[in-house]
Amino acid sequence: MVSQPATVTLAEAAVDELKSRVRGDLIQPGDAGYEEARKVYNGMIDRHPALIVRCVDVADVISAVNFAREQGLTLAVRGGGHNGPGLGTCDDGVVIDLARMKGIRVDPAAKTVRVDGGCTWGEVDHATHPFGLATPSGFVSTTGVGGLTLGGGIGYLSPIYGLTIDNLLSVDMVLADGSFVTANADEHPDLFWAVRGGGGNFGVVTSFKFRLHPVSTVYGGPIFWPLDQLPELMAFWRDYIQSAPADINGWFGVVTVPPAPIFPEQFHLRKMCVIVWCDVGPLDQAAERFSAIRAFGAPAIDAAGPIPWPALQSLFDALFPSGLQWYWKADFFNELSDQTIALHKKYAEQLPTPFSTMHLYPINRAVHQVGADETAFGFRDANFAEVIVAVDPDPANNPRMIQWAKDYWLALHPYSAGGGYINMIMDEGEDQVKAAYRDNYARLARVKATYDPSNLFRVNQNIKPVG
Image 1 (cartoon, rainbow, N blue to C red):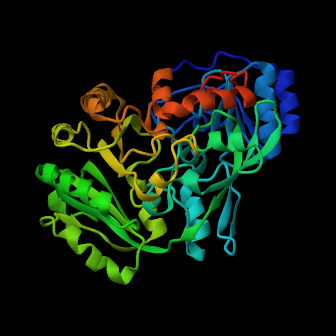
Image 2: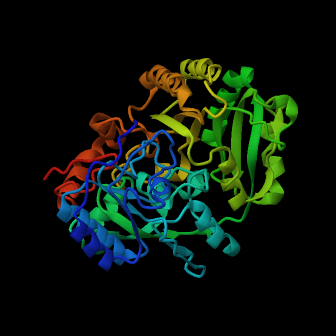
Image 3: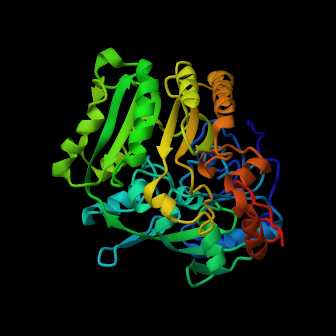
C-alpha cells in the first residue's frame, strides 16, 4: 500500500482558474503543508494527490468536482478521514477535503440537526448534548459523519433508534455533473435510497439532516473479564443481548488492557474480554437492571456507571490516535455457534499487538424493523457485525498482524452471513462489495448509472454503473 510521489503535473492555467473560483485552500506537492494535508487516519496509507482542495462551502465543492471531471483526473472525497483502506485519498488525482465544512444547526423543537459534511461525531455530540439529544452515531467520536452515515451507521443506540441511516431525513449533494440536489423521501427518492448505505458512490454529500432522540446521561462503560472466561462469557452475552430491552446495548471485544492510570496496574497489558455497555433507560433503574449482567462471575474491572453520552462516545478516542497502522476484516453473523466461539478464543489468545482487537456489535430490535430493501443496507436480518482490527504504531509489525487478521477472518467466514459491513472492510474488490450489498447491488448499480454514469466517484467501495 506504499505509493510513489505524485507524477501528474497539472496545467498552471487550469489550477489558476480553479483558484479564482474557490474560497478554500488549494494544496499541491511542494506547497507548505502538503505532507500533512495528504495524511489520512490510517498510517498504512501513503498516497500523493496532485491537488487537495479544502472546500469551505458548496460552491467550492461544485468547482472542485467540475475541475476533476473536466481535467480527466481521479477524484477522492474525504470527510472525517477514518476510512480503513484510505478511500478518502488517491495518487495523482484530486482530493476534495471537507474538513473545513463544520456547520451544525440543532432544531430542538423539531428534534433535528443539520450537519455539514466535514464534521465528526464528537462535534455533533457537542452541539446536540446541551439539548439532551443525540442520534445513532457509531462508537468513536473522531469518526467522520459522512463516512459512517453513508455506509449504514451501527452504533450504541441502534437497538432502540436504528442505524444512523434510519434517522437520516435528507441530504444535500453535488453530483458528478456539478449539479446540486436535495435528496429525501420526496425529492430524488431513488438517490436517497441509495445513499442510505451505498457509500460515496453517488456524489459529494455536503450536508445531512438527522432525526434526534432524547439521550443525555446514560448508564454505560466497559466491564472486563479474564480471557479464559471467553467461551462462557460470549455465550452469556450472545443470549442476553438478543433478549435484552431495546434501551440496553453492549458490544463484545477482545483487547489488551492499556497501561493507563484508569485501569488497575495488575491488569496492564493483559489480554481480556470486554463488554462496553450503553443503557439509555431510566438511570434510577440501571443498577438493578445490570444485576443480571454482573451476576456472570466476578468482573476483573467494572467501570460501568452513569456517564454523559459524549463521554461514552469518546471513551476510547485517545487509544487510537491518527497515524497508526490499520488493517480491518469484517463479516455479519446470524448466529454465534459454539464452534465460532471456540475460534474466537483461539485467535483472541493470539492478539498480535497491544492495539489489535476484535469487536462484535449487536444488530437487533429497531434495525430489524426496517426491510432489507428499504435502504441500501441489506443485512437487516443479521444479528451481529464482526470487525477484526489489526493495529500498531510500527509498520514493521504489519505483516504479522495482517496475517493474524486474515487467518482469523478465514476461520470464521464459513459461519458468517456471507458479507461484511461496508464501513469496516478494506479495498478488497468487486466481489466483496457485491457480498456487502446482497440483493440490493443490482438496484444500486442502476441508480449509479443514473447519477454517475461515467463512475467519476469511484475511489470508494465501488459500485459500477449498469443501466
